[in-house]
Length: 422
Image 1 (tube, rainbow, N blue to C red):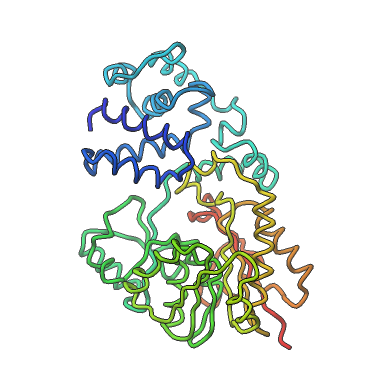
Image 2 (image 1 turned 180 degrees about the vertical axis):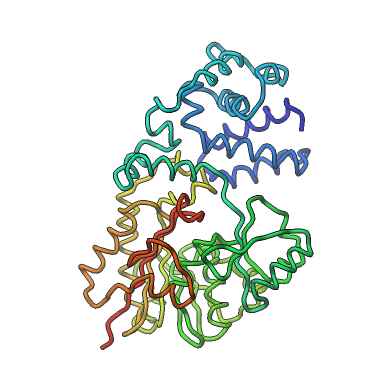
């Protein structure tokens, strides 16, 4: 792709994301459908540039101005990645008062990041930077932000119904894709860069799914067994449902609950590819669903991967940090979902609450509130559960806490609880 085309497409796509309501990946899919003349490499270069801008948006706005158009933000990003002001000018960068390419280059060259406000240095919204600083302190917040502002690794989970990890690793290598094993999950493989895997023979045969290592550990926290009744309460598109089904060796009854039929619809072809037929997809209503009430007190294990701020996934979804959220509304929903899901757990059964959030309010505070109100449940130390699979995570407490800068995963939280035997 020539410089002119990269600047043009990146500026237009970034503007559509910042001015619209769609998630960045959806906006990109739509943009690339509308510009079919772009080749695979052109799309890759444009997507990479736009994601880089979204990760560093606070810093780019600081240099170019808070009200700078998308073209200026892209210009600063391209300058910081090695473009010269002359290259920008030759690419047709539209200079406006205060946004000349050479002036932007000078500002960037003279920038002293140590003197910038925390939210600019971390490229986080003020509300999130402040909360993380209160939890972790300034130095570790900066380290966390540095990790969040890097592209995520590509993690796979082996489908143990069809292969083991070593076999999958060897087959992928034969197909031209080198992977290392993940440090914590016994089911995972990892590489640092993307790879065209969806057309690979291994994927078509259902030998693996793309799933972050941290997400894999959430499924392992539930420890589902053969022939049990298990419920994935907020299943979404079913990534963890697929893992649970494999852990159950395709036996028993596994329910995938969600309020969105479209999300569950995406699970059907994935189940077929994985070779799973013990899964029942159930669309439920947000409150007082009859199908939920009929299963009350009958499930051996229930996983609640609750809707959350998504702050732990910013490596993959940097756009969400720039969208407004109502944290009070989110935590109220989390409490309600956890309370409803808990009613499904039988005497002696297990309940796992999980999020992909970094925030205390969505994690420990939810569990503390729940256990105060529901004394029939007790916390099961996460270290005990994972030790049974020879998983040793340094510094692990009663709950599972995963951090991008400490563990190399997305940010995750999980707490396992057992209903007392009666």
